[in-house]
Image (cartoon, rainbow, N blue to C red; front, side, top):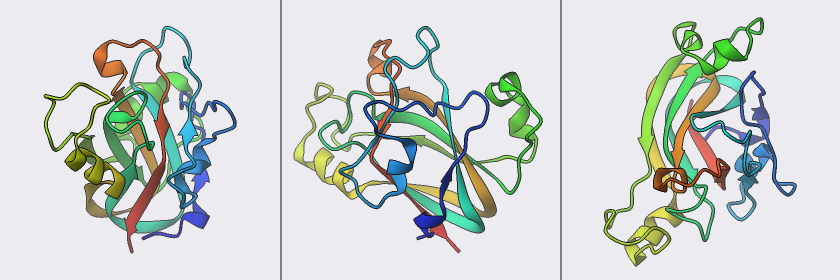
Length: 185
C-alpha cells in the first residue's frame, strides 16, 4: 500500500472539491473508514455528472490496484459512487482552464485510463436500494477492489459518472466516500 501521508488534494479547474459539514476530501486517505468526505449538496445546482476529483500521490509509483470504501450505513445508496473511471499521469498541465479539464482534451495529454469501475451488489439489483443483503454488506465493509495496468503514475483523477442516488433520478449531485487505498511499488 502506498504511503497515504504523502497524498495531497489537488484542485484542477472543474474538480468538485466542495465540502459539506467539515468533511473534506483528505478524509478519504486518513486510514479511518468512519470519517468521510462529503461534497456539498447540491454541488453547482443544475450541473449533473460527471464530476471530477484529483489526488497527488506525493510520489511516482507503479500502481497495481485500488481499494475503495463507501460510506458506512449508505452502502449501495445515497451519494456513494456507483460508476467512475480512474485516470493517472506522471505530470499535468497547469496552463489550462475548466473547459480543458472537463472536456476530452486532457485525456490525450499525458493521462492514461487505469480502470473503468462500477460498484455492484453481489446480490444483484433485485433488492431495493438501501436494503443490502448480508453478503452485500460483507463485500462493502471489506472494500471494493479495482485492478490497474501497473504503469508508473503520480497523479490520480477520478471521473465520477454516477452515484447510487443519481442513478435513480435524484438530482442532488452530492458525493461521499469513506476511504481509498492505492497499491503498487
